[in-house]
Length: 125
Image (tube, rainbow, N blue to C red):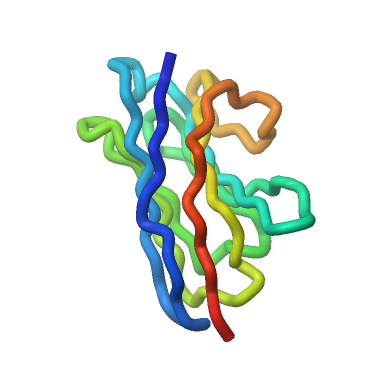
């Protein structure tokens, strides 16, 4: 069992930055691929970014590529999402999630059994 807790959300102006963190419990965090997903009101949950268990591979949604960076510190059981050049359309509840995916990352939310409760990100224009 893995327990995930997100933090770092808030209100920021367009063009600003935020850094989300996701702290995980358990001793096997380093075995999990991790992902960030987001859900805006009235919309489906969508993929944002994912990183492999070892941190060597990552993948981004086209909408955030070049602006967001996912990283992880396995010694601290934490995954991060650095968000730069934020836009109003980035406003959503952001969730981190974990799954076993071998040495690869994973884009499919259906593959993730472990989810945090989310943190709100609001970008004002």
